Image 1 (cartoon, rainbow, N blue to C red):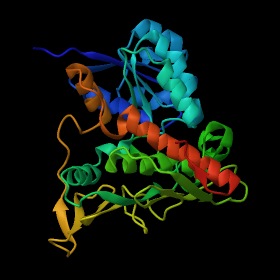
Image 2 (cartoon, rainbow, N blue to C red):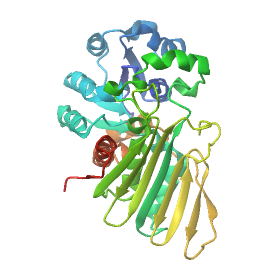
Image 3 (cartoon, helix red, strand yellow):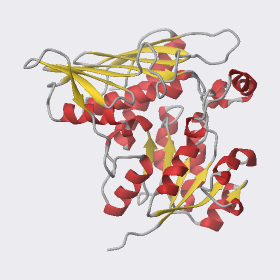
Image 4 (tube, helix red, strand yellow):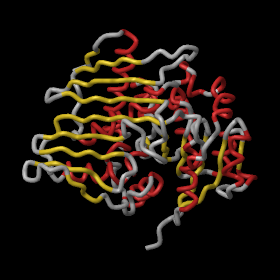
Length: 359
C-alpha cells in the first residue's frame, strides 16, 4: 500500500536546528515541506536559498502559514522559554508537533504543552543524541543485559558555544559570535538561555532512557557565574537515586566542537552497571565495554542506525504511519522525567542547596 505524503511546516527559527530538521523533511520520500514561518524574514532566507521550501511559502505570520498550507506536522524551534507558548498557539490547528530540545524551561511549562495537545495528536520532543550511533548501541547493550542493572551514568555535554555554529553546523567566526551574543536568546535568562537548559536535558533524558525510566530522589547543582553574562556557561549536577549517583556536566566553551574534534573531557556518556561498564562518546562508530567475563576494555562496533531510527523526522513519520507510540528520549514519559531533573537542578543552583523531587 502506498504511504501518504505528510505535509510539514517549520515555525519559529529561534534555534538553528530548524535548518537540519527541514532538510530531513525535504529528503524524506513521503514528506513535503509546505511552508515556514518566522517574524524575522532573514532567518528563513537560508532554507529558501537551499531549496528546502519555495520563497512564496515563507510567511512572517504563523497563522497565515498554518491556514494556507494546512500542515499535518509542525516543527517548532522557539527559544526554550517559549515552547509552551508556541505549542498552545499551534495545537488548535490540529497538527502533530515536533519540538526541538529542550522539552521546556520548566516542568510546569512541559505539562502545559502536554495538556494543550488534542488526545489524537502526537507531541514529540527531539533530542538529537537519540539518533547518534554510539548512544543507540549503548542502549541496545543495556537493554540486552550486557552490563546488568544500570547503577550510574556520567554525562559531559557541550560545545564551543551556541553561536559558533549555524544550521548544518556551519562555522562562524569569533567576530560574528561577538556581534550576535548581546542580542541572542541563548544568553538571556528570561528566554531560557544558559548551558544548563541547553544541554542538561540531554544527559538527564538519555540517563532516564538507560535506567529504564527511574527517577532520582534528589538533585544537587552548582553553576559558574561569568562576568558580564546573565546566564551560566558551565554546570555540574549530581542526581541521587535509590540505587546510586549519576552526574551531568554542561559546558559552553569546550576547546573544540565534538562533531569536529572531540575535546577533553570527551563529550558523551559512561554507564556503569552491576555486571560491567560502557563508554559511548558522541559521534564515535563504536562503544567501549567491560564485563566480568571480559574485563579488558574492548571496542564494540556501533553501526549506523537503520530506518526508522536515522533522524527524528523519519522516526516520527514512521510512528504516525504505523500507529506505534514514540519510544526513548523523544517520548513524553522519558522526556518529562528528564525535565523534572532539570527543574530540580535549576532550583538547586539558585538556592545553593540539594533539592528533593516530589514523591
